[in-house]
Amino acid sequence: MSKDYLGEFEELVLTMVGILQDEAYGNAIVNEIKTRVGRTCNLSAVHVTLYRLEDKGYVKSSMGGATNARGGRRKRIFTITNAGLAMLRVMKEQQMQLWKLIPRLNYDTMI
Image (cartoon, rainbow, N blue to C red; front, side, top):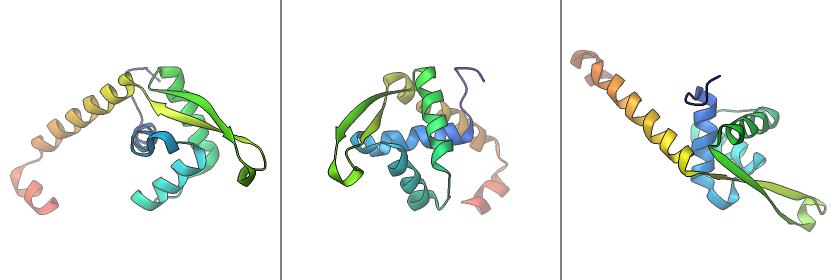
């Protein structure tokens, strides 16, 4: 997969990282997807996607502090990069251009 292309799930995960900001870690992203989109996803799929986005330069990660609630384990927190924000903007623009191509009759009934 090319660095300049995101799949649908990658775009969804990247968007959630942008929404969650300092709280963007695996389980929080899974929960946010379920809450906002009504879609269930597996934690492993989210982690694989986050690491792929990191390899592409769209997110960066750092380790958060250990907490008693997590049994002393630390969370890996993900942050969207400027390149990630730029990619989301490009994808939104591409989608809007495609939406504009839908014939008016169909477009009015879809919205």
